[in-house]
Length: 158
Ligand SMILES: [Zn+2]
Image 1 (cartoon, protein in one colour):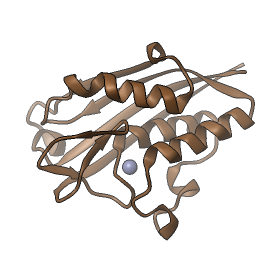
Image 2 (cartoon, protein in one colour):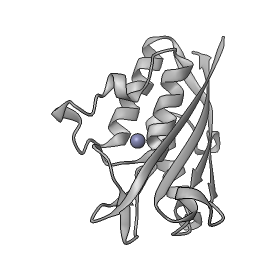
Image 3 (cartoon, protein in one colour):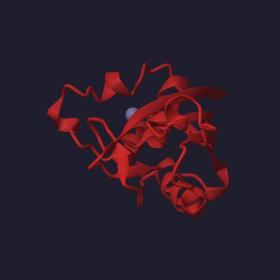
């Protein structure tokens, strides 16, 4: 009846890359390194859905050795995994996420991210929670070297 999944993702922050989180482009002097658009939040949610389906992970479905996924739009990858869940007879019940980023402050972007994700997940915006945290100056996130995201997703039989 129900399936639960967990996702986690980290990207290094580098210059000359956009900072994309939950499909929103956040104005900042650095962005996520990575093969795709580096959207750590969307990757964590995608992995959580795959986990709930016992379907391995993002790297298995969209290998970064495949040029097809170079600079891929992560929201499209999420859409494919949501479609896979629907194929298996599941719909998204709700998603809860943490984004760990030292700078910039994400508060003013959270609702745009929730809206983008709700659309991709085919749920109401009230089913998508995103909490923004800092690293309190500690470790890679705290030093501003990385962005990390965590997600828990609940699927229910549709
Ligand atoms: Zn990623």
